[in-house]
Image 1 (cartoon, rainbow, N blue to C red):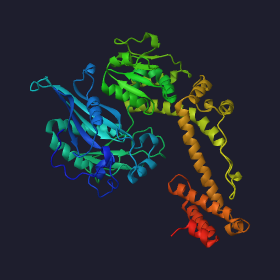
Image 2: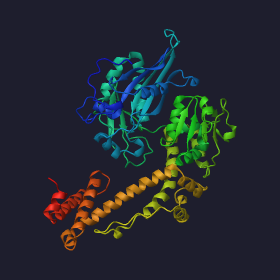
Image 3: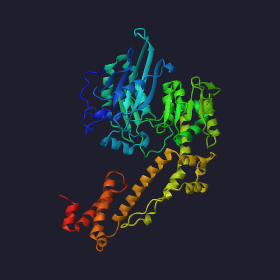
Image 4: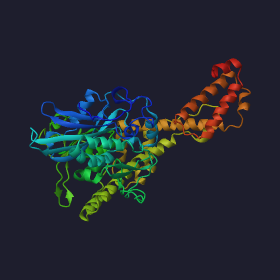
Length: 549
């Protein structure tokens, strides 16, 4: 593997591309570059080796042989796709070294403010690819074939696609010097900070992006333009760092978008077979990441994975009147191995009725040549409202399981969160179900029952229960700290009870300082004072045990 010369100093690294402790400190070389990208790779086609890794930059970034092989294999479109010209797509691979640990302060800071879906991946790399294949008589094979790949832990597909669109064409013309200059520019970018709007200069262009925060409210309109009087050139504003054009992605499957929504909600595995890597990867990303959603272009996978319960085969976009030709719902028994026609092959029956009003609205938008962004915003709003209508009754029921605040007393163990009883929840839907916020009819009860059996319910419940347990601990700590007089409480208590209080308060402080308990700083200070007061009331030998020198 060749590498660029004159790359300059590179941050220290541990095993398998893992940054060594302190490597992301502000003063460390390439620290700002590392906040966005792990490395940049160039993959070319070698007549003897096939796909080969030609270059990695910065040059001392360490990839395992398996990671190199995966990047090489996934960075070239399958031969069946027949991609000529320039193509962009993306993939995700598992880091062979396993989950990165311990987390660095910058990672924790970013993840604590970012939505769960946009947090840095601890055990995977994202690969964002710009592939060029053009005829070239000077090459033995008759074609110039090369991919420029940005490797990152951030799922910022829209930002990195835009970045590749700027740097890849220039790189294919000028090669190494261009890439070195671009990486140096990225090393000057501010770190991605949730909730902030950033201006990122590269190759004479300024990309303006807003990094989403977990407290963001959905925005459907175009982004507000910032004043460019103080900055030339005028920034190119990206509407999102991660959201794709949903309407364009779902054009051939609009009539089944709610069925696909149900499959994703239930965590069902789905195989997407598309005619191009760009279409396959965009459709997979438009669905959702956490499920097992595999996007391929080679029909061979139809034979290999014909046992998958749900297979979506899409063809080249073709118009049928004003609406793109829609794939049909087909039984898995009609699935053929190589000449499979476009369709959604599944035995699954949707629980909810199709929203015909949405389809009419989107069709009318096509007829009136409504902007793609507007169509996408309409589709995104529909799916978001559908998801909210489904999840709100669950959230309300879960909140009802929380003990009342008045039942939490200072000097007793806090009451337990009541268990989630599925029958009680289903009964509650009669007066507090999704029908209050959604006009769609259908078997909502059946959808909830199936959701309870899915891995997504288990993940959702565990997360919400953990958050509620932390809230309960925080309320108990506040109750202790708001008690009138700890000295009065200690008068008739044994040494064992006082020591037990000290240990419990210390445990709560450790949790709170690890940002797991939502408590105020004043509460933490008072808890520390209580600990010191309680320890001071104990004999010297116990004080020595609790506060060793």
